[in-house]
Length: 245
View 1 (tube, rainbow, N blue to C red):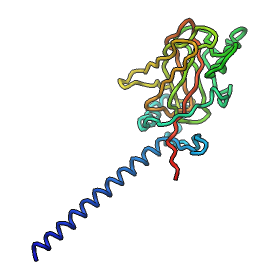
View 2 (cartoon, rainbow, N blue to C red):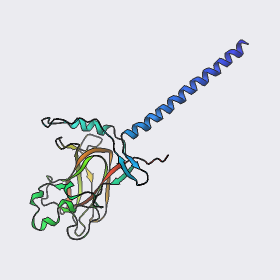
View 3 (cartoon, rainbow, N blue to C red):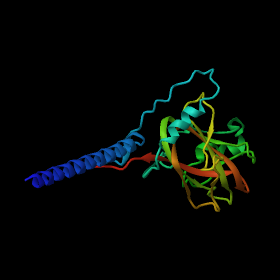
View 4 (tube, rainbow, N blue to C red):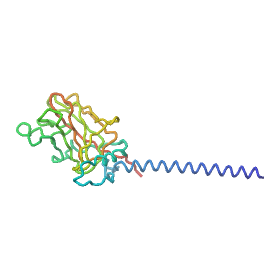
């Protein structure tokens, strides 16, 4: 009788231990899903467009504070790789002229007025089909203002449509607010990452950001070019996987 009782208690103990382990596993899986949801954007499954982006507790620093780059870096550290991407709207025209700028833009007069940064739209064709930098040196930059903080997951580039001119490599800077210092996108060794660009005028080269960046302002800085700094481009925005219920 005692042996049967002990056997029964042992079975109950095993069942209790297994139930606790299963419950802990489910909780860990749910926690992982919640972590991913909190650090990515949500999408509308019908339109395949992101409808809600994450909110981050990055405090607005006073204008007099010189450097809040670490606050931005903390946001970057928690971001996973994006499973889905959506064009920001260079090619479609959703990105407006006043969102795009470049270095020395006030000097784009005469012939150069047809090659302003607003022309740097993916698959743009005809005369004035790309951004052409007036100066060919490593001090030039191309900037996008997304109008709000967003999750940026990649960049597409092309060369000039009607001539053999293109950017061969570049680096990326970004910042969340206008009064913050620019941050270079780093590689795994902590160095400024070099992105390799185009080798002809028409092919599209895609560079994904792993991890993506959380920013409102993005700058592309040409480091190498063929003949002249010339570019057409598109930004990619991070999307979460659509889940239908």
